[in-house]
Image 1 (cartoon, rainbow, N blue to C red):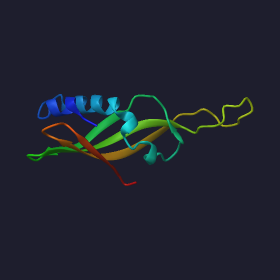
Image 2 (cartoon, rainbow, N blue to C red; image 1 turned 45 degrees about the horizontal axis):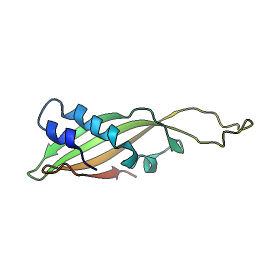
Image 3 (tube, rainbow, N blue to C red; image 1 turned 90 degrees about the vertical axis):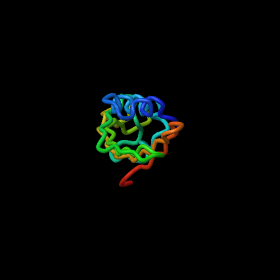
Image 4 (cartoon, rainbow, N blue to C red; image 1 turned 30 degrees about the vertical axis):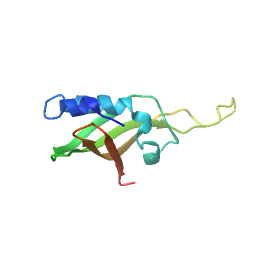
Amino acid sequence: MRFEHALAAWGTADFDSALKQDMERVRDELPLQRALAQGSAITAAPLTVVVHHASATARLIHVRAGIFYTSVIAGCSCADDPTPINENTEYCELQLEIDRKLGYVSVELLDE
């Protein structure tokens, strides 16, 4: 996973939006499924990313971000399936470390 937009925008006012753009692009690679608390499957609705903290060393950009996303309880989709199709709001926090040279990212799910 590479966050090229966020790396290019580091130190500017555009960093948060560039990070959100990169996260949306790789959403299937983020550990969101592991963080589900209410549903059983993630929907395709856009992510809402809140940057809580961002700092850097010579080698890495460290970001703590909160992610709001939606899930559903997946049923069998049969005509007599009593499972309602309601979206649930999910939330998790991720620790991201972005390599300042190449933009490669490591992601850790916090408070699993």
